[in-house]
Image (cartoon, rainbow, N blue to C red; front, side, top):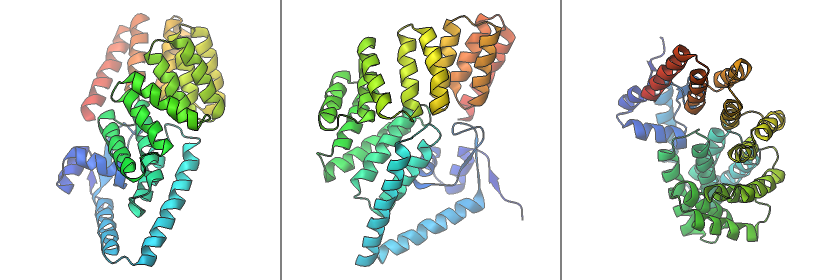
Length: 330
């Protein structure tokens, strides 16, 4: 018998008799089996039989929870700790592509032990990073991170990693730059080598229009964890903001060799190429980056702008129409 395929968030939601937003949340936090075309922001589809199996496994877990013994609870807590250690290792070399997996492992750790503060904070960090780099919609990611930190604060209000994540939320979600900077400073007074906090300090300096200060902080962040592509992208972005296009392009090329090229770094390189003058060779490079990251609406828009300023108006209109269609499909 052929598989029954559901070809949009709406059809998946109708099948489950829930709203599309609820279904998206189940996918993000409870591993609802949904597949993507063209990356995490592309069109989605799911198979009805996979969803049915997921529902059955969820019901079985709930039945096990109802009859848990002390030994079972101890085993679940142990498994939760093991999952957190695995997620921590992945976080240390996180990339845009791995954020969904990292979040899902933290989520599984929470399922095994809802009181695991490290798992809750780790999930919050993954949600914040996913929103920052366009992997998730901030309207979903930031409230989820906020709720995770609220629960952590009830369990361990003085946990330093929780304070770091809270500072990030003040910066990027609440737009309270001074309070965020004070939070990062407190974290760094206790953990001077925390690259996530150092990156936060760099971004808070950008928000305060202090690009020289941002440069100093971002280099410290990158030097603490040179294998994180997002920190490499932040280095290049600050150079770009400072008007140092040549430096931004040189650094982008080097960061790609050491860290890989995520969507954020591709956007920064493309913007710097346009600032340098969108000739045929640079436009070809921007088109290649856009092809490598078809899910990045920002990158597609940069390509459309590059085509427009180069006189390729028909191509620019074609790309804009495709972007508009992608927005409708989301």
